Image (cartoon, rainbow, N blue to C red; front, side):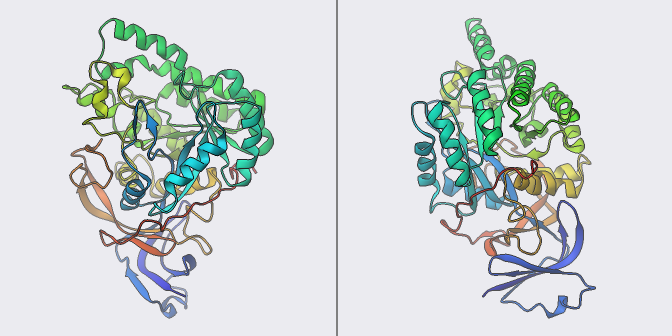
Length: 466
């Protein structure tokens, strides 16, 4: 039996802030002891970590990543090995990645392929969502089987006709199935059919630069699709989780649905909170670095996203980490913005950016932990194993230095991509030590983890629906 004690830190969870020592035994949190607890001094251990002056927080849960995703004739540049290592450097100890069903193939084939990519290669624990690209009677039956295996959420796309797109009828059928089996439908809500028309028209006018990617993927088409997804879920009697919400008009649709008491949830991402169309408009094709979907919006949308996070109309911040190198990958779209692979790197930056948001007054410390750790764990059936520091929880723990300053840069990050979306950004706060199930993955800013430590983690159904 190995015992670790973390002494002297401020333990922050979604519900509490408490000066306490944390005892870890055999990979789990065994006890918390405050200075008023007689047992505090009696904790003996093989390893003692001094967290004086630091925060002790749960490892982050990033519920939206795409490692090794095939897209636009290329692959996301992070493997499960490099991507999970980078996640750990950024204080994230669990990712939920997306297994992909290809049209004409079964869900099982897609899930098996992703298990093969991840197994034995991850530095931290991982789970899977399932992208459903081909709704038919067989795949609907398979959804029930996947839920039994701990894959309890299914993503559909109202965008990308000819690739991942589902029409309203297919979406309704999948939602009806999830209403029966307890699954959660995750929706990429953009009107892809209408967007394709606008793309064609823009290219015909000679509008080929990256900034036009943002102009054709209009906020109103995100709002329209969000509204439609909500109504389809309401007809099916099913819950709905809308991914990567970027537009204030879409936030308004979610807020309205939640005010009506519907089981509708929303996620946003750091890129929408910190970046804008100004980045997409950077000269010399630099804007291609910021091409993702939903796209970056004009800066005025940011205030409404922060407000949504404060009012709980948005519940989760995930990264949608889907990196493509500028050289050789993003460049595929020179002369045609529609050929730029969609995606941004971010799995390493999320916890630090959100801590900066605490300092900037956008959210509280506990809300930081809530939107980055606890709520994603509850939303996707991992709580209280993940997302909190409490007896019985996995000892996924981050020692966080709230005073250290850093400059974000591709020179120093650990993601396998040749640029940073936040190049030159100064933030205060930095991960110092990371434990995954009690094992040190980062030790005082040195990587001490190993490939294969991370294991597949089956999930129960959404814990907001019980």
